[in-house]
Length: 209
Image (tube, rainbow, N blue to C red; front, side, top):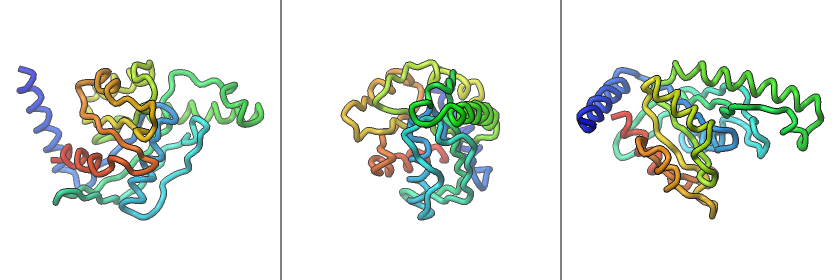
């Protein structure tokens, strides 16, 4: 029965992709998982330019960023997409977390902007044709934030590809992510160094039929 349902959804999503000339692809996940690093990698690979700034400070991306007309190719297939990089999703933002990087005024402003960014990111979910969830493979995937993100996507029946990022680090453990979310395809990458990107593009194009 599960196989029948799975085939139905695969067929449905394949048709959805085919009908659209340009797919809206959203990058979602917790802060500092590597969404913008992945966005930059995709843009560098296919456009020769970066998309946004990257920082060790959480919530560097606090506004929706969009790059149009990116055509990716792999194994004879191609897909043109609008890439949407979203602010990191968090269940709680405390300005004091930013105090070691900046003064109190800037920390409060950053917290306010980050909160608005999260609200905007969730609103944008309804516009997405498919979503890449970018997770830090060195961290425990069983977090409230990750479960919230996945739950929102399941409720909307949005096609999802899970990316286990930072596989170049010794603590990376893709098996934990596969165990946490067995219902999804997972690809291990290092967005920083480009490891696993060929498989990433292939899986993305497979989703597009």
